[in-house]
Length: 378
Image (cartoon, rainbow, N blue to C red):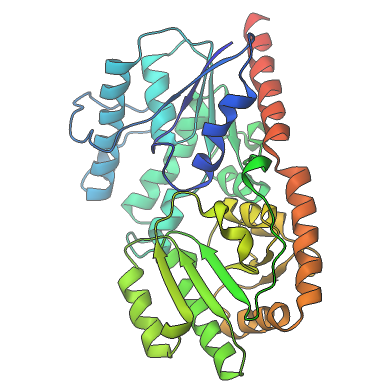
């Protein structure tokens, strides 16, 4: 079977898709399977000029919004690049971004399309203060889910939580299939180590939706309680300067290290002790699985797909979002009790290895692809 994996961002872009798709090629390498990756280069902007028509709604009433205009132009650019670069036949296309899936169906209308929705662009924009809830942009972006349902042969997402979210915007929620992201176990090598001072780490884009302001305030509370720690921030984004100023104002700048963007954080993640990310929204939260495979203790929020990975008190700790005191209390538990921390990290490692191994997820995808091929022939 000749497969095309259609991404939006290039494979080196941080995020759950890039943690999985490039490594799938090895799992599919055989005489039976051929897999190609495709994405829109960052330099391709403002090239497309196709008229955009959706099958399930009229987008033009939302066109006065700059956010919607940018989305439509990006769709045009993806169409332009696809037509320019792809001229071979595929047996199946698996898209990992709405724009990628919509463009592929326009260019290859007779090829079966599997569409995975990995996250909610509209929720991130709302939480980051870029658009208003129920505004033009929110209405437009949620209508895209129905369009994806219409054009896809199989609509998928990465967690039950996000499937429930999408169900409000689709006609037949029972069609939504759940396959979580998978991770190449060989990339994650837990390392036996002892740190005299507990090392906290987070790996994320620095935007308000990730709740790092809450983390900083919780760390200030830990310092007030007399606990030693170091907080490592891996990632970059528009919120960085504000976070650096917040660390200074809270008196925790000396305990906080900003690394910026790092391509392969899993290479040194095993040397830390505790992974913490108090997100305000997550469709799945791939970085929790990556931290679990690195054998770190997990502390997260009870939102989105995170509680599907973390059972509170069993393989990590969960707190409500935006609760500084609860987050400080959870971190205090794992900072002050190394034995408990180790117990949580081992349980997290066991679960992640069993449920999120790339081999297991690749096998699930193969079943889906072959079933679609069978259905088409039948």
